[in-house]
Image 1 (cartoon, rainbow, N blue to C red):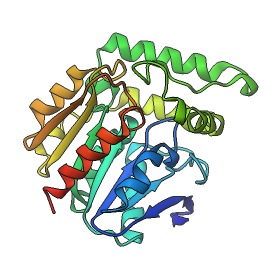
Image 2 (tube, rainbow, N blue to C red):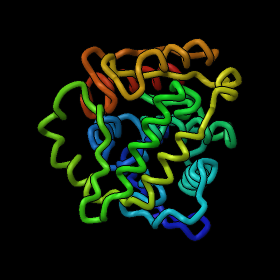
Image 3 (cartoon, one colour):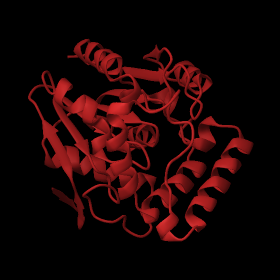
Image 4 (spheres, helix red, strand yellow):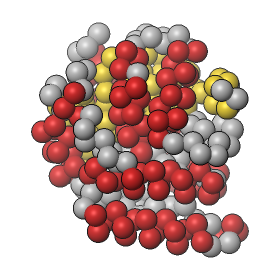
Length: 260
């Protein structure tokens, strides 16, 4: 547990070697990286946080914004004395990773952006953003006992059976007070101005069948970021690290090795 400005942040840390920081998506916590933690810890110091308001971490402070997530993540990296790290973010976590680079580029050795966005505003058509905001409002309007944080289109097909218990456990622990503000932050976020100035090697990992962040978003990143490469995982949806963990892990490992 790491304390950052009064917020307790739960962190899993495994392995030895170059640091690899994993940033989970909205409606998840650090357990979402279970398929990566042990396998990649054979070669890296792997760190996966429960962001503020998720998992075992403290509740999300009132008024916490996207930049606050980035500053909090930076403080975790500094407290753990990781130095400059490979930073991987999935979906919302990729947007947090971009914001980390905006404010603390010295802490980022490489960026790994998986099925993510330059914010919804920065990556999706306005009508799609409006539809997602409306869906988030409906989700949050129901009584707490009927609250269901499951977002549509996370997998190309059914979730992998081996991970269904994990996904169910994470869904039960989602706090409306966290996912609501996050989704509305995503609706307003636009990181496009940052992309041309990214000076570290960047890996894009995308599910070929991702409907939440379609391949067109990946290609927009590819065009905008100077030093980038794109790995498309065939037959895979939005949560690519869970749907194709072996391929995901191999792709991450090979990329990080190239920049050690």
